[in-house]
Image (cartoon, rainbow, N blue to C red):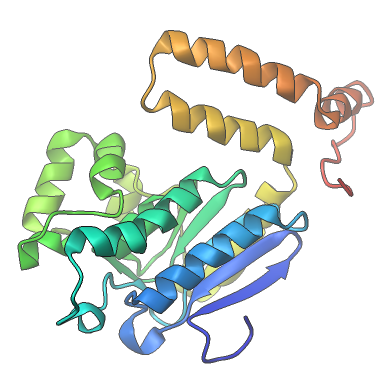
Length: 262
């Protein structure tokens, strides 16, 4: 999508597909069109051999202010039906994608926007980024994966407090709590995100896909299951050309080249 009217803008450079939520006048609050288009773009990136990393960010001064309440007001649809039709497929698509997903949080991430911010494999925040689990302010339950993601990052008790009190978490506190991996200055944020994503894109794509698969499963599995899965996935990794290239580069004392026509 290239039109300025598109709710999701898509661009690709150096193996990095950047998907930009494009409702800046609403702080990228999510409506059905945005959620469905973003899910479609994520899935399309997964099947594009030219894409090695996906970045999700927001246009303007916000990442995503959560659900656009005006878009669902008066609609003949239950909360459950709405989540199952829009947010849940998106979160599943991101977590199930066999490519690294970077959420580049350039401003406020509230409600379901906070869930989207947290569900990346890597979370990069700008200095002005802010995360708010705002659901309790309108007497709702955190959704779109927040109840699964947040306690795994900060523990049950801190997660409950953030959700119960709808506390605002700024960039430095987010870094301290483990809600993001890096914080970059606002003025260089886009360039810093692209540079980081390109570093990630230069890594062994097949091995990272298997690593993501193993980590996702390990979050809900036992140690014995993880050990067995590692053994199986290690064979898949060892049989791939990336492994031979990595070993050969090590022996030849040069940088490995993991990007080639596949």
